[in-house]
Length: 455
Ligand SMILES: [Zn+2]
Image 1 (cartoon, helix red, strand yellow):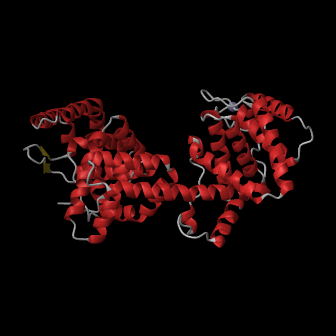
Image 2: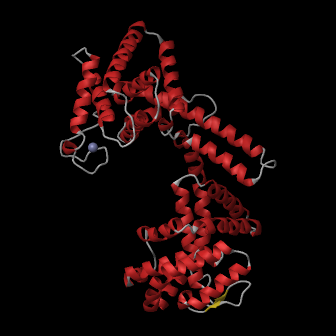
Image 3: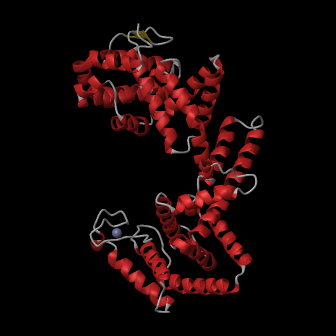
């Protein structure tokens, strides 16, 4: 299999957006030439040529701040590696091959950019502990040698390229990386690479699982912030464990989101945590016009403006802890033991918040809380006499100012400043939209929440 099928007119893989021939091609050709010169034997096998070409791309692509090793050095070490492998083949030394595999596994753990090269073994029913299940291992090897394995191979080559640019290597380590790359790109040798990754994946999951358990055992001695910081650090060091946890909790999360969607579970967060989102949503709906109102939903792309709101204006600093409180209360309140378990899973995952998938969940819940404010008018804010009777009241400067003052009286000064700022930045803009579509927007929010909060 050719790893890089680079045509002169294809987009340059360095990501510049320019054509390959006008961007990195000359650098890659130059690197290929210098590596071959350094290897020096002239007549390469097809496999050897494939390794050199792959390395030339990895070392030749432009990068702003990365430092690829010089091609001469790569070529010299590659020659040493090939001679070593030649000796190994002629001596039929099984132990030496195992030792090489161990060296690769150590490297896969030590170099930061190589930590993403792992195999989700749980999807094949292979656990980290227990005896080696040969038939499952064969199934995994077959899968990664098949058509879907190509994505894995390209990702792994990419990670190796990143590692060459951004991780530090001694000569010995670089030789080990060249061995691994050779195994990866040569079809007949790929199983050796996959097997090493498989072993490394198992030992990662095992190690992460033990660290997780020992941190959780001490949960009574630590405060929550410290506990979660330690757990997050484990997930950062073992991304594959992070992925496994997320996938295992998928069903639990879906269960909670369904309960929220059906109105069985109410989320109650203070208005200042979603005010910016309310403005963003009203503006967005107005931009998109009647078509969205008719479909009664915002699709994923339109949710982007909410995401922008949540993360660019810093609203998640207010929203996130309040959401956790609300979910926590719901978990304590509910009589439904399944819902309670699922809520606790979701809480655990949200607090760890270590990959984009959880941010998607956060965004979804943010949207729900916004809908809930828009749909339940008229309402009086808790502990105040401030009443919101129609959508327009969100744009009433006096009302918003009274709300901000109330927050100040509660010593919530940052929150009050946030309310004033968001109103100034976005309230006016959204006001016009609300005038045109007031009834429709309220109706849409109500219908999205399944009429659960209808008066
Ligand atoms: Zn380029």
